[in-house]
Amino acid sequence: MEVRIASNAGEAATLAAAQIAHWLRAAARDRGVATMALSGGRTPIAMVQLLADLDVPWPDVRVYQVDERAAPDGDDARNAALLEVLGEVGAVVHPMPVTASDRPAAAREYAASLPAQFDVVHLGIGDDGHTASWPPGDPVADLEQPVAWTGRFNGYDRMTLTPGPVNDARHRLVLVTEGNKAAVVARWLDGDRDLPITRVHRSDTVLIATGDVVPDAAG
Image 1 (cartoon, rainbow, N blue to C red):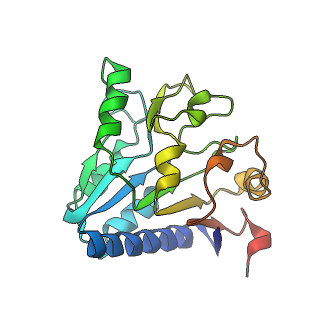
Image 2: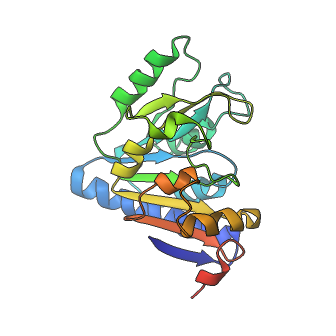
């Protein structure tokens, strides 16, 4: 795993956006279509806004969600607004169908829409060590099907990619800019198997973090 340290959250967002744009351009050039799965939350908002302004052949990019809360369309709890930013510049977006009445069928439908292999998967990390929507103790991170539902997690049921498609991706980028996550990131880097994020393969993974998250890696 490659670790890159930024001086602040703005620089981290800039580095992450530039790296993802590089991967997407290369994928579109080599295969005609580039595919990305995007995690939600507050941390990637600046990254996605910067990414939308970069030189990327957006009509050739397909954007999916890593996870989504089961909340009504337009609800502030939803992560789909991040995809809309990229849709506005021409990317083809694939939001998770979390309002469907038949949840198992919705998961199968979304799984059928996935590419054979993602070019890029963006991830974050929670202060409990979760990534995507793989809560500690939830069996979702051990399932073989590519898309599944979690149990109740921080107030919401969630649809999520499972480790299979995440680890099959050509590239993974983990963005962490909150200093209060330093302890859990240190545990992850030390290989603490109790953390769901340790299911993410380290090869072909780039961690971009601020110095208050991974201070010992600077330089």
